[in-house]
Image (tube, rainbow, N blue to C red; front, top):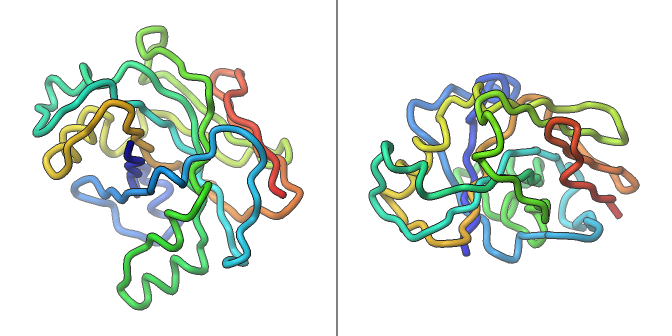
Amino acid sequence: MKIICIGRNYADHAKEMNAALPTEPIYFLKPDTALLREGDFYYPNFTKDLHFECELVVKIDKVGKHIDPRFAHKYYSQFTLGIDFTARDLQQKCKEKGLPWEPAKGFDHSAPISTTWLDVKDYHFQELEFKFYQNEELRQIGRPKEFIFQIDELIAYVSKFITLKTGDLLFTGTPAGVGPVQIGDELRAEIDGKTLLQLSVK
């Protein structure tokens, strides 16, 4: 099982990170040990600047390679919410040295994900809205219609390079509003008023 994460898929997030808008999808991988399906999140001791990035997550249903965008919708049927935790201080060091971002993005439990999956067919996907709260303060609002690259485009693009397999997870990118977390924070993410993901930072 792979965790495939898309970077800069919202124009407003690219702007807040002082990054150029991509002309094609940007992706990176997290190992399966990054998954956190339930329980508390423990602040890692190798960073002093850990940021949340809430994202819509799609689960791949079947094996595919070189998937045509016209048929990409056949490769997923469920979605949920997750968090791409990022050690921003480590990421900055990696950027400055031109090094890969895995230490900042791929550490253990850096990808908490809801255990509740929703069926795509039950929603008007382009009208979806998810919200992320930190200590019950609204921090992020995400809408698939604001993606730079839609899910079918992402699946087609990534499958040109790596084979997608059943159970792979696609984190589709985060909207603006990312920020630091602290020990003691309560984090919560919802879709249409329904809480899907909730965790404490220890």
